[in-house]
Image (cartoon, rainbow, N blue to C red; front, side, top):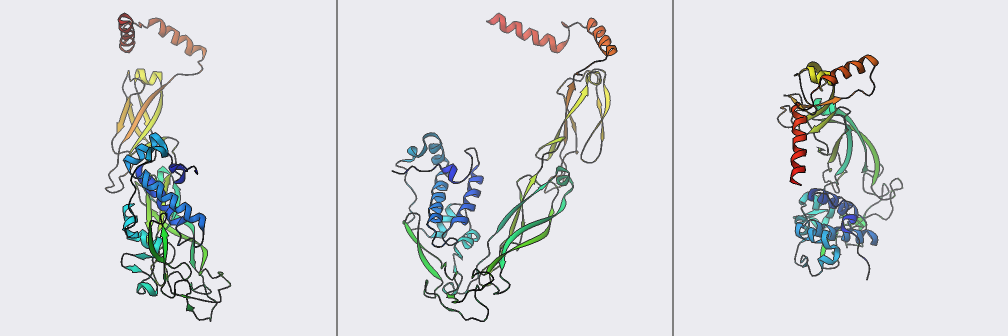
Length: 383
């Protein structure tokens, strides 16, 4: 009996991922390996079924927990979904996909597909995804960024038909002119009607192919667009740019471009939602005697008064000096974590003065020290 692959490996995710990340990964794989996009490719069909099976288990909290504990053996006897009486659209709806996704994958919505067999309805083009890295300063102010990406566009020679210019179409022999074919899915448990892979739902084909695109009707094309990054955006959020995806079929609308934003690590600040955290070093004397210091922020330095006797790790809060909220624009706070630095090397004078100070110290009456040793003595007496 063949060994089954790990479900997390199939979806290319870690075991600690969230259900949303599992859904996102499955969606990409389903669109990549769907038979409509890979006609006649047996390997793609296998990978499509593997991804669907992995998602079915990992998207169910109870089944996922059982799988995490016992592996594939823990799923023996688990009743699966009855796909025989389900519409393909319903199956993908069960997996969390709406009609837009179904149209992209199958070339048809609940009302029927494109092409002659589908009443001439156009097919929406595929969505695309790209990513861009921005700095924390750009998160603070917002930014206009040029996005360069490559998409499949209509071939300029044949205008997307895939045919040699001047030739006439003939009825598709694969689908008999209907634009649709039946395909078995999920191990043969049901059959579904999908767009014909030979004519892409048109019901017609051309005997002579376009020499420029080799009959594909599409050619890769680089494109540069300017995208506004709103202030306050978070790492991993996406900006949808309508109509910048791939062109649709049979007059259908273009898909969209999803720009995933990645925020680079900052050398000074770490982010907590709309708040910022700054780990700021000060000297022993500044903490002991008190001092007025300058604190860097994303919009200039701010003054901070350190009271005498401030301890290591004390947290100061500067209200309204964090990042703007993406929706309201209201700014978060800046938390300044004080770190007392011990000098690595002392001059002779500094060492002499510190030794004189050390001679005046009474370790028994320092509150932090006293409390620490009292706890040690109490624990030893209990032992």
